[in-house]
Amino acid sequence: MNIVIAGDGEVGFHLARSLSKVKHNITVVDPNSELLKMLEADSDLLTIAGNSTSLKTLREADVANADLLISVLHEESINIITCMLGKRLGAKRTIARVNTQEYLNDINKGMFKGMGVDELVCPEKIAAKEISNLLTRNVATELFDFSNGLLCIYMFRVDQKSLVINKTLIEVAKEHPNLGVRTVCIIRKGRTIIPKGDETYLINDLIYLIARPDSVNKIKQLGGKEDHSIKNAIIVGGGRIGRRAAINLHNKVDIKIIEQNIERCNRLANEFDDVMIINGNGSDVSLLQDEGINETDAFIALTQSTETNIMACLYAHRQGVKKTIALVENLNYIDVSQDIGIDTIINKKLITANYITRFTLGGEITSSKWLSGIDAEVVEVVAKKGSPISKKQLKDIKFPEGVNIGGLVRNGKAIIANGDTQIEYNDKVVAFTIPESTEKLLKLLS
Image (cartoon, rainbow, N blue to C red; front, side, top):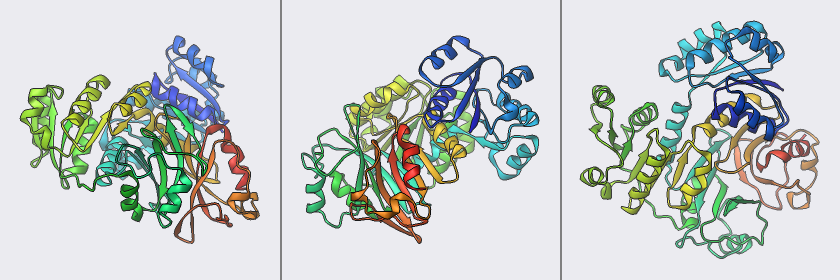
Protein backbone atom coordinates (compact mmCIF):
# COMPACT_ATOMS: atom_id res chain seq x y z
CA MET A 1 0.00 0.00 0.00
CA ASN A 2 1.25 3.51 -0.86
CA ILE A 3 0.80 5.69 2.23
CA VAL A 4 1.56 9.39 2.67
CA ILE A 5 1.79 10.64 6.28
CA ALA A 6 1.70 14.36 7.04
CA GLY A 7 2.89 15.20 10.54
CA ASP A 8 4.82 17.61 12.71
CA GLY A 9 6.56 15.35 15.17
CA GLU A 10 6.26 12.15 17.15
CA VAL A 11 2.74 10.93 16.27
CA GLY A 12 3.48 10.92 12.55
CA PHE A 13 6.95 9.47 13.07
CA HIS A 14 5.73 6.66 15.33
CA LEU A 15 3.02 5.78 12.83
CA ALA A 16 5.51 5.87 9.94
CA ARG A 17 7.99 3.57 11.71
CA SER A 18 5.23 1.12 12.63
CA LEU A 19 3.74 0.93 9.14
CA SER A 20 7.10 0.76 7.34
CA LYS A 21 7.92 -2.45 9.22
CA VAL A 22 4.98 -4.21 7.61
CA LYS A 23 6.26 -3.46 4.10
CA HIS A 24 4.06 -0.49 3.15
CA ASN A 25 5.55 2.20 0.91
CA ILE A 26 5.68 5.19 3.25
CA THR A 27 6.29 8.85 2.42
CA VAL A 28 6.45 11.31 5.33
CA VAL A 29 5.82 15.04 4.89
CA ASP A 30 7.02 17.20 7.79
CA PRO A 31 8.19 20.83 8.04
CA ASN A 32 11.26 19.89 10.12
CA SER A 33 14.06 18.67 7.83
CA GLU A 34 16.39 17.77 10.73
CA LEU A 35 13.84 15.44 12.30
CA LEU A 36 13.22 13.85 8.91
CA LYS A 37 16.93 13.02 8.59
CA MET A 38 16.76 11.15 11.90
CA LEU A 39 13.67 9.27 10.73
CA GLU A 40 15.28 8.29 7.43
CA ALA A 41 18.35 7.00 9.25
CA ASP A 42 16.46 4.25 11.09
CA SER A 43 13.47 3.52 8.83
CA ASP A 44 12.91 2.32 5.27
CA LEU A 45 10.82 5.19 3.90
CA LEU A 46 10.88 8.44 1.93
CA THR A 47 10.73 11.91 3.48
CA ILE A 48 9.84 15.34 2.14
CA ALA A 49 10.46 18.55 4.07
CA GLY A 50 7.58 20.92 3.53
CA ASN A 51 4.09 22.11 4.36
CA SER A 52 1.36 19.55 3.72
CA THR A 53 -1.09 22.27 2.67
CA SER A 54 1.19 23.11 -0.26
CA LEU A 55 0.02 21.61 -3.56
CA LYS A 56 3.62 21.49 -4.72
CA THR A 57 4.63 19.44 -1.67
CA LEU A 58 1.67 17.07 -2.04
CA ARG A 59 2.49 16.50 -5.70
CA GLU A 60 6.13 15.85 -4.79
CA ALA A 61 4.87 13.24 -2.30
CA ASP A 62 2.89 11.63 -5.17
CA VAL A 63 -0.40 11.94 -3.31
CA ALA A 64 -2.21 11.29 -6.59
CA ASN A 65 -1.14 7.64 -6.35
CA ALA A 66 -1.60 7.28 -2.59
CA ASP A 67 -3.86 4.51 -1.35
CA LEU A 68 -4.03 6.35 1.97
CA LEU A 69 -3.24 9.92 3.08
CA ILE A 70 -2.95 10.39 6.85
CA SER A 71 -2.61 13.88 8.35
CA VAL A 72 -1.80 13.91 12.07
CA LEU A 73 -0.38 17.37 12.77
CA HIS A 74 -1.29 19.07 16.05
CA GLU A 75 -3.31 21.73 14.21
CA GLU A 76 -6.60 20.14 13.11
CA SER A 77 -7.34 22.78 10.47
CA ILE A 78 -4.11 21.87 8.66
CA ASN A 79 -5.09 18.18 8.77
CA ILE A 80 -8.51 18.91 7.29
CA ILE A 81 -7.10 21.10 4.50
CA THR A 82 -4.37 18.53 3.75
CA CYS A 83 -6.96 15.79 3.32
CA MET A 84 -9.25 17.96 1.20
CA LEU A 85 -6.39 18.86 -1.15
CA GLY A 86 -5.07 15.30 -1.19
CA LYS A 87 -8.47 13.91 -2.13
CA ARG A 88 -8.78 16.35 -5.03
CA LEU A 89 -5.32 15.32 -6.21
CA GLY A 90 -6.35 11.65 -6.27
CA ALA A 91 -5.68 10.07 -2.86
CA LYS A 92 -7.98 7.06 -2.54
CA ARG A 93 -8.63 7.45 1.19
CA THR A 94 -7.90 10.23 3.69
CA ILE A 95 -7.68 10.35 7.49
CA ALA A 96 -7.43 13.56 9.56
CA ARG A 97 -6.55 13.93 13.23
CA VAL A 98 -8.94 16.34 14.96
CA ASN A 99 -9.44 17.68 18.47
CA THR A 100 -12.95 19.15 18.25
CA GLN A 101 -15.46 16.64 19.63
CA GLU A 102 -18.31 18.28 17.70
CA TYR A 103 -16.82 17.07 14.42
CA LEU A 104 -17.22 13.43 15.45
CA ASN A 105 -21.01 13.11 15.40
CA ASP A 106 -22.46 11.25 12.42
CA ILE A 107 -23.96 14.29 10.67
CA ASN A 108 -20.71 16.26 10.78
CA LYS A 109 -18.62 13.24 9.77
CA GLY A 110 -20.84 12.92 6.70
CA MET A 111 -20.23 16.57 5.87
CA PHE A 112 -16.46 16.13 6.14
CA LYS A 113 -16.63 13.04 3.93
CA GLY A 114 -18.33 15.15 1.27
CA MET A 115 -15.42 17.61 1.55
CA GLY A 116 -12.85 14.86 0.97
CA VAL A 117 -12.03 13.80 4.55
CA ASP A 118 -12.99 10.12 4.73
CA GLU A 119 -12.15 9.44 8.38
CA LEU A 120 -11.66 11.54 11.50
CA VAL A 121 -9.50 10.31 14.39
CA CYS A 122 -9.43 11.93 17.81
CA PRO A 123 -6.66 10.52 20.07
CA GLU A 124 -8.17 12.15 23.14
CA LYS A 125 -11.53 10.42 22.62
CA ILE A 126 -9.86 7.03 22.09
CA ALA A 127 -7.71 7.54 25.20
CA ALA A 128 -10.75 8.40 27.31
CA LYS A 129 -12.57 5.29 26.10
CA GLU A 130 -9.55 3.16 27.02
CA ILE A 131 -9.55 4.67 30.52
CA SER A 132 -13.24 3.82 30.90
CA ASN A 133 -12.66 0.22 29.82
CA LEU A 134 -9.76 -0.20 32.23
CA LEU A 135 -11.78 1.05 35.19
CA THR A 136 -14.73 -1.16 34.26
CA ARG A 137 -12.54 -4.27 33.98
CA ASN A 138 -9.87 -3.28 36.46
CA VAL A 139 -8.10 -6.64 36.71
CA ALA A 140 -5.96 -5.70 33.69
CA THR A 141 -3.16 -3.21 33.16
CA GLU A 142 -3.84 -3.20 29.43
CA LEU A 143 -6.91 -4.46 27.61
CA PHE A 144 -7.90 -5.13 23.98
CA ASP A 145 -11.07 -6.68 22.58
CA PHE A 146 -11.28 -8.81 19.44
CA SER A 147 -14.20 -10.31 17.48
CA ASN A 148 -16.69 -7.91 19.04
CA GLY A 149 -15.52 -8.76 22.54
CA LEU A 150 -15.64 -12.56 22.24
CA LEU A 151 -11.88 -12.68 22.92
CA CYS A 152 -9.84 -10.28 25.05
CA ILE A 153 -6.15 -9.62 25.56
CA TYR A 154 -5.30 -8.84 29.19
CA MET A 155 -1.95 -7.77 30.57
CA PHE A 156 -0.88 -7.89 34.22
CA ARG A 157 2.36 -7.90 36.20
CA VAL A 158 3.51 -10.94 38.19
CA ASP A 159 3.93 -9.94 41.83
CA GLN A 160 4.40 -11.73 45.15
CA LYS A 161 0.69 -12.59 45.32
CA SER A 162 0.59 -14.22 41.86
CA LEU A 163 -0.14 -17.95 41.87
CA VAL A 164 2.08 -18.47 38.82
CA ILE A 165 5.33 -17.13 40.27
CA ASN A 166 8.33 -19.45 39.69
CA LYS A 167 6.14 -21.98 37.86
CA THR A 168 6.33 -23.04 34.22
CA LEU A 169 3.44 -22.64 31.80
CA ILE A 170 3.03 -26.45 31.79
CA GLU A 171 2.89 -26.59 35.59
CA VAL A 172 0.23 -23.87 35.71
CA ALA A 173 -1.82 -25.64 33.03
CA LYS A 174 -1.71 -28.92 35.00
CA GLU A 175 -2.67 -27.21 38.27
CA HIS A 176 -5.54 -25.32 36.59
CA PRO A 177 -6.78 -27.58 33.74
CA ASN A 178 -9.96 -25.57 33.18
CA LEU A 179 -8.36 -22.14 33.39
CA GLY A 180 -9.33 -21.22 29.82
CA VAL A 181 -6.58 -18.63 29.25
CA ARG A 182 -3.36 -18.69 27.22
CA THR A 183 -0.17 -16.71 27.71
CA VAL A 184 0.87 -15.29 24.33
CA CYS A 185 3.77 -13.06 25.40
CA ILE A 186 5.98 -12.26 28.38
CA ILE A 187 7.93 -9.01 28.75
CA ARG A 188 10.92 -9.46 31.05
CA LYS A 189 13.33 -6.59 31.72
CA GLY A 190 12.46 -5.04 28.35
CA ARG A 191 12.88 -8.33 26.46
CA THR A 192 9.98 -9.86 24.52
CA ILE A 193 9.56 -13.61 25.05
CA ILE A 194 7.26 -15.85 23.01
CA PRO A 195 6.78 -18.50 25.69
CA LYS A 196 6.86 -22.26 25.29
CA GLY A 197 5.61 -24.75 27.85
CA ASP A 198 8.87 -24.84 29.81
CA GLU A 199 9.04 -21.04 30.26
CA THR A 200 8.93 -19.97 33.93
CA TYR A 201 6.93 -17.00 35.22
CA LEU A 202 9.19 -14.69 37.23
CA ILE A 203 8.39 -11.81 39.55
CA ASN A 204 7.88 -8.48 37.71
CA ASP A 205 7.15 -10.24 34.39
CA LEU A 206 4.51 -8.48 32.29
CA ILE A 207 2.20 -11.19 30.96
CA TYR A 208 -0.14 -10.88 27.98
CA LEU A 209 -3.03 -13.37 28.21
CA ILE A 210 -5.82 -14.17 25.79
CA ALA A 211 -9.12 -15.17 27.33
CA ARG A 212 -12.87 -15.02 27.02
CA PRO A 213 -14.54 -12.14 28.90
CA ASP A 214 -16.14 -14.61 31.32
CA SER A 215 -12.66 -15.73 32.41
CA VAL A 216 -11.90 -12.51 34.27
CA ASN A 217 -12.27 -14.21 37.68
CA LYS A 218 -9.81 -16.90 36.59
CA ILE A 219 -7.35 -14.19 35.55
CA LYS A 220 -7.72 -12.60 38.98
CA GLN A 221 -7.02 -16.02 40.47
CA LEU A 222 -3.95 -16.48 38.28
CA GLY A 223 -2.57 -13.05 39.07
CA GLY A 224 -3.45 -13.12 42.75
CA LYS A 225 -5.37 -9.90 42.22
CA GLU A 226 -7.88 -8.69 44.77
CA ASP A 227 -11.51 -8.48 43.68
CA HIS A 228 -12.40 -4.82 44.05
CA SER A 229 -14.73 -2.46 42.26
CA ILE A 230 -13.95 1.13 41.38
CA LYS A 231 -16.44 3.39 43.17
CA ASN A 232 -14.58 6.71 43.11
CA ALA A 233 -11.74 8.31 41.16
CA ILE A 234 -9.62 11.43 41.06
CA ILE A 235 -8.74 12.82 37.62
CA VAL A 236 -5.81 15.24 37.57
CA GLY A 237 -6.05 17.43 34.48
CA GLY A 238 -9.33 18.72 33.08
CA GLY A 239 -8.24 18.99 29.46
CA ARG A 240 -9.78 17.16 26.51
CA ILE A 241 -8.94 13.66 27.76
CA GLY A 242 -9.94 14.40 31.35
CA ARG A 243 -13.24 15.95 30.27
CA ARG A 244 -14.06 13.06 27.95
CA ALA A 245 -13.14 10.51 30.63
CA ALA A 246 -15.49 12.29 33.05
CA ILE A 247 -18.29 12.18 30.46
CA ASN A 248 -17.80 8.42 30.12
CA LEU A 249 -17.51 7.71 33.84
CA HIS A 250 -19.55 10.19 35.88
CA ASN A 251 -22.72 8.06 35.81
CA LYS A 252 -20.81 5.00 37.07
CA VAL A 253 -18.14 6.39 39.41
CA ASP A 254 -17.90 9.34 41.83
CA ILE A 255 -15.46 11.70 40.10
CA LYS A 256 -13.27 14.56 41.31
CA ILE A 257 -11.31 16.62 38.76
CA ILE A 258 -8.28 18.63 39.90
CA GLU A 259 -7.36 21.37 37.40
CA GLN A 260 -4.97 24.33 37.74
CA ASN A 261 -6.56 26.58 35.11
CA ILE A 262 -9.45 28.51 36.70
CA GLU A 263 -11.22 29.19 33.39
CA ARG A 264 -11.17 25.50 32.54
CA CYS A 265 -12.50 24.75 36.04
CA ASN A 266 -15.42 27.11 35.46
CA ARG A 267 -16.26 25.46 32.12
CA LEU A 268 -16.16 22.00 33.69
CA ALA A 269 -18.30 23.14 36.64
CA ASN A 270 -20.93 24.47 34.22
CA GLU A 271 -20.93 21.18 32.31
CA PHE A 272 -21.07 18.68 35.19
CA ASP A 273 -23.58 18.80 38.04
CA ASP A 274 -22.36 15.60 39.68
CA VAL A 275 -18.57 16.01 39.37
CA MET A 276 -16.54 17.92 41.98
CA ILE A 277 -14.18 20.39 40.28
CA ILE A 278 -11.16 21.48 42.34
CA ASN A 279 -8.90 24.35 41.32
CA GLY A 280 -5.38 23.32 42.30
CA ASN A 281 -2.14 21.52 41.50
CA GLY A 282 -2.68 17.77 41.16
CA SER A 283 0.86 17.04 42.31
CA ASP A 284 0.39 18.99 45.57
CA VAL A 285 0.64 16.32 48.27
CA SER A 286 -1.30 18.41 50.81
CA LEU A 287 -4.16 18.93 48.35
CA LEU A 288 -4.30 15.23 47.52
CA GLN A 289 -4.42 14.37 51.21
CA ASP A 290 -7.21 16.91 51.77
CA GLU A 291 -9.19 15.29 48.94
CA GLY A 292 -8.92 11.84 50.49
CA ILE A 293 -6.28 10.22 48.30
CA ASN A 294 -5.95 7.32 50.77
CA GLU A 295 -9.66 6.51 50.30
CA THR A 296 -9.60 6.75 46.50
CA ASP A 297 -10.07 3.66 44.31
CA ALA A 298 -8.59 5.05 41.07
CA PHE A 299 -6.18 7.90 40.30
CA ILE A 300 -5.84 9.15 36.71
CA ALA A 301 -3.14 11.73 35.87
CA LEU A 302 -3.74 13.44 32.52
CA THR A 303 -1.79 16.71 32.63
CA GLN A 304 0.44 17.85 29.78
CA SER A 305 3.53 17.00 31.87
CA THR A 306 4.60 13.36 31.69
CA GLU A 307 6.82 13.79 34.74
CA THR A 308 3.99 15.28 36.80
CA ASN A 309 1.69 12.42 35.81
CA ILE A 310 4.25 9.78 36.76
CA MET A 311 5.12 11.35 40.11
CA ALA A 312 1.47 11.95 41.04
CA CYS A 313 0.55 8.34 40.22
CA LEU A 314 3.55 7.06 42.15
CA TYR A 315 2.42 9.01 45.22
CA ALA A 316 -1.15 7.71 44.79
CA HIS A 317 0.15 4.15 44.53
CA ARG A 318 2.09 4.56 47.78
CA GLN A 319 -1.07 5.86 49.45
CA GLY A 320 -2.82 2.60 48.62
CA VAL A 321 -4.84 3.63 45.54
CA LYS A 322 -5.97 0.44 43.81
CA LYS A 323 -5.70 1.64 40.20
CA THR A 324 -3.32 4.28 38.79
CA ILE A 325 -3.32 5.49 35.19
CA ALA A 326 -0.83 8.02 33.77
CA LEU A 327 -0.75 9.85 30.45
CA VAL A 328 2.83 9.42 29.21
CA GLU A 329 3.87 11.09 25.96
CA ASN A 330 7.48 9.85 25.88
CA LEU A 331 7.55 6.22 24.72
CA ASN A 332 10.88 5.72 26.49
CA TYR A 333 9.17 6.24 29.85
CA ILE A 334 6.64 3.41 29.44
CA ASP A 335 8.79 0.57 30.82
CA VAL A 336 10.18 2.70 33.64
CA SER A 337 6.71 3.89 34.65
CA GLN A 338 5.36 0.36 34.94
CA ASP A 339 8.48 -0.84 36.78
CA ILE A 340 7.98 1.68 39.59
CA GLY A 341 4.38 0.70 40.27
CA ILE A 342 2.07 2.61 37.90
CA ASP A 343 -0.66 0.24 36.71
CA THR A 344 -1.42 1.58 33.25
CA ILE A 345 0.21 3.95 30.79
CA ILE A 346 -1.86 5.85 28.22
CA ASN A 347 0.16 6.99 25.20
CA LYS A 348 -1.55 8.96 22.43
CA LYS A 349 0.98 7.90 19.80
CA LEU A 350 0.24 4.22 20.38
CA ILE A 351 -3.52 4.58 20.51
CA THR A 352 -3.54 6.74 17.38
CA ALA A 353 -1.37 4.19 15.58
CA ASN A 354 -3.69 1.39 16.74
CA TYR A 355 -6.75 3.18 15.41
CA ILE A 356 -5.24 4.19 12.09
CA THR A 357 -3.53 0.85 11.44
CA ARG A 358 -6.91 -0.81 10.85
CA PHE A 359 -7.31 1.31 7.70
CA THR A 360 -4.06 -0.15 6.31
CA LEU A 361 -4.96 -3.81 6.81
CA GLY A 362 -5.29 -6.20 3.92
CA GLY A 363 -8.53 -8.06 3.41
CA GLU A 364 -7.24 -11.05 5.39
CA ILE A 365 -6.59 -9.06 8.59
CA THR A 366 -9.77 -7.92 10.30
CA SER A 367 -8.23 -6.20 13.34
CA SER A 368 -4.83 -5.20 14.73
CA LYS A 369 -3.51 -3.71 18.00
CA TRP A 370 0.01 -2.50 18.80
CA LEU A 371 1.19 -3.33 22.32
CA SER A 372 2.58 -0.71 24.71
CA GLY A 373 6.33 -0.45 25.05
CA ILE A 374 7.20 -3.38 22.77
CA ASP A 375 7.64 -3.81 19.05
CA ALA A 376 4.79 -6.26 18.53
CA GLU A 377 1.10 -6.46 17.69
CA VAL A 378 -1.92 -8.71 18.07
CA VAL A 379 -3.77 -9.40 14.82
CA GLU A 380 -7.08 -11.03 14.00
CA VAL A 381 -6.92 -12.98 10.72
CA VAL A 382 -9.56 -15.02 8.88
CA ALA A 383 -8.23 -18.45 7.86
CA LYS A 384 -8.71 -19.20 4.16
CA LYS A 385 -9.85 -22.47 2.64
CA GLY A 386 -6.98 -24.95 2.25
CA SER A 387 -4.54 -22.75 4.18
CA PRO A 388 -1.36 -24.48 5.45
CA ILE A 389 -2.31 -23.82 9.08
CA SER A 390 -5.56 -25.79 8.67
CA LYS A 391 -3.83 -29.03 7.66
CA LYS A 392 -2.19 -29.84 11.02
CA GLN A 393 -2.68 -29.37 14.73
CA LEU A 394 -0.89 -26.30 16.08
CA LYS A 395 1.70 -28.42 17.91
CA ASP A 396 2.83 -29.90 14.57
CA ILE A 397 3.26 -26.57 12.76
CA LYS A 398 6.60 -24.77 12.58
CA PHE A 399 5.69 -21.17 13.27
CA PRO A 400 7.86 -18.18 12.31
CA GLU A 401 9.92 -16.66 15.11
CA GLY A 402 7.85 -14.23 17.15
CA VAL A 403 4.42 -15.76 16.36
CA ASN A 404 2.00 -17.26 18.88
CA ILE A 405 -1.60 -18.32 18.20
CA GLY A 406 -3.74 -17.26 21.15
CA GLY A 407 -7.30 -18.18 20.26
CA LEU A 408 -9.97 -18.22 17.60
CA VAL A 409 -13.65 -17.61 17.01
CA ARG A 410 -15.57 -20.34 15.17
CA ASN A 411 -19.27 -19.97 14.36
CA GLY A 412 -19.62 -17.24 16.96
CA LYS A 413 -17.91 -19.24 19.74
CA ALA A 414 -14.57 -18.26 21.29
CA ILE A 415 -11.94 -21.00 21.65
CA ILE A 416 -8.64 -20.65 23.53
CA ALA A 417 -5.90 -22.34 21.50
CA ASN A 418 -3.67 -25.19 22.69
CA GLY A 419 -1.33 -27.64 20.98
CA ASP A 420 -4.19 -29.93 19.94
CA THR A 421 -6.19 -27.14 18.30
CA GLN A 422 -6.63 -27.34 14.53
CA ILE A 423 -7.62 -24.23 12.62
CA GLU A 424 -10.52 -24.54 10.19
CA TYR A 425 -11.67 -22.56 7.17
CA ASN A 426 -13.23 -19.19 8.09
CA ASP A 427 -11.99 -19.25 11.70
CA LYS A 428 -11.10 -15.81 13.04
CA VAL A 429 -7.64 -16.41 14.47
CA VAL A 430 -6.13 -14.04 17.07
CA ALA A 431 -2.33 -14.19 17.04
CA PHE A 432 0.61 -12.36 18.61
CA THR A 433 3.35 -11.42 16.13
CA ILE A 434 6.41 -9.25 15.74
CA PRO A 435 6.22 -7.02 12.61
CA GLU A 436 8.92 -8.97 10.74
CA SER A 437 6.83 -12.15 10.95
CA THR A 438 3.40 -10.77 10.00
CA GLU A 439 3.68 -11.70 6.32
CA LYS A 440 4.83 -15.24 7.17
CA LEU A 441 1.86 -15.62 9.52
CA LEU A 442 -0.49 -14.48 6.76
CA LYS A 443 0.95 -17.09 4.38
CA LEU A 444 0.16 -19.81 6.92
CA LEU A 445 -3.44 -18.61 7.03
CA SER A 446 -3.85 -18.08 3.26
